[in-house]
Amino acid sequence: MRSYHIDELAPEDVARLARALDARGMKSSMDAMYWLDLPEALLSAEQRDHTGDCGPHSVGVELGEDWVHAELLVRARNRLRCSCVCYADATQRAWIMDELDRTLRELDIPV
Image 1 (cartoon, rainbow, N blue to C red):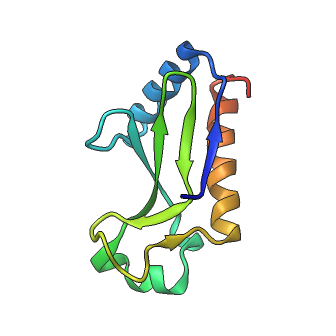
Image 2: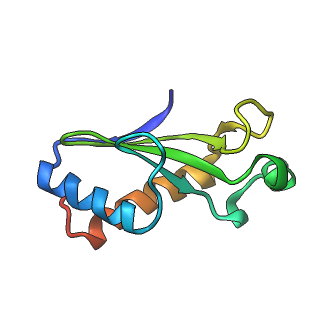
Image 3: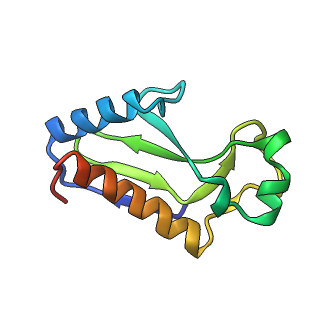
C-alpha cells in the first residue's frame, strides 16, 4: 500500500488532531480512522463520472499513538470494487500530503 506516514508525534498532539478531525466530520465508523474527501476538481474524469454511484472519493487517514498515516489509495466510499478506485495521481497525492501538513500546521503540531 502506498501511503504518507508521519511519526514521532507527541501523543497529546495526536489527540488534538483527532479532536480536530472529529470536529470537521471526518470520523469513520472505525476507531482512529477518518475520511479525507478529495475535492471534485481533483478527481479523474472516471471518478467524476462515477461520483453518483460510487462517491464520495476519499482516502483513509489512520491515527496511532504517535503517528498519522494517510493512504494514497483513492477509495469509492459507496462501492468496494470499481475501476474508479485507484492510487492517487501526482496532483491528488500532492493535495493529500499538503492537506495533512496544513492541518498539522494549523494545530501547531511540529513535524
